[in-house]
Image 1 (cartoon, helix red, strand yellow):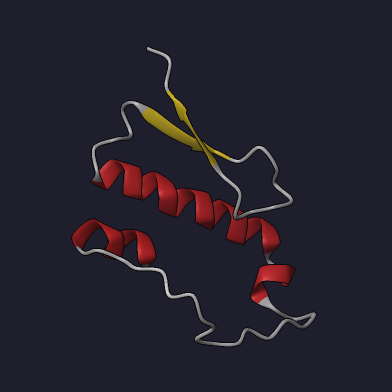
Image 2: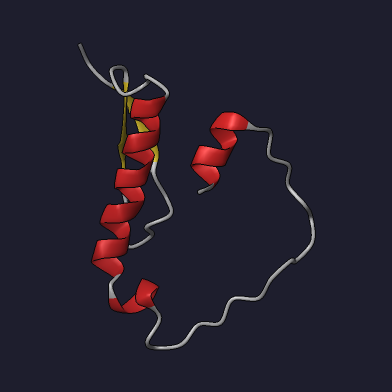
Amino acid sequence: MFLKLSEVCTIHHLDQIMYAYRWHGDNTSIVHKTAQFENHVQVIRLALERLNLDKDWEVCSPEQEDIRKVEFRRKVT
């Protein structure tokens, strides 16, 4: 959602807690970690396509243990 919003408006960081997130053993992010990782990377790839950046850039994740950590690499042509 935030990727799409950033394409059409300006987003500002608020330096205050606006919500609480509860972790427990049945969280989707824990139970379906592999699927969440794949979806995370796919969403970023689609954003690159919408911005016409996919021809020059690719997204990768050097550490699959940390699904939020991704890197962008310039494609070799």
